[in-house]
Image (cartoon, rainbow, N blue to C red):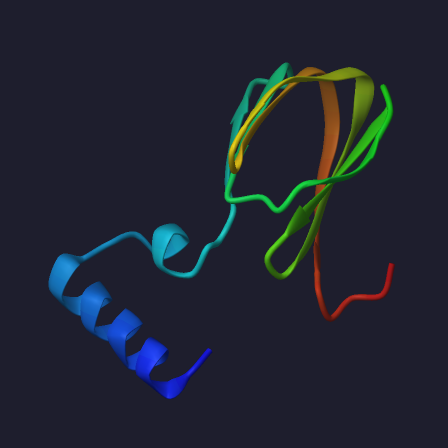
Length: 97
């Protein structure tokens, strides 16, 4: 990111008081029980099976494992997953797969 972009982002954060996930394109993850998962600000699906789902993020990936996983919908940068969710693991871009 350019110097002007960083300064503009800092200014908008201070003036508009926007949430960090919006400003830094961080993922927003909402888990409803162990049955439903909503992910915002993702960069696409890397791998999918009924037992595991890997989603690309700006800085890394998100691995979801469970049983009977299915993608309910994908709308732009929003994704909804249903099934029995057993584990959610974030891997930053500096981590080795």
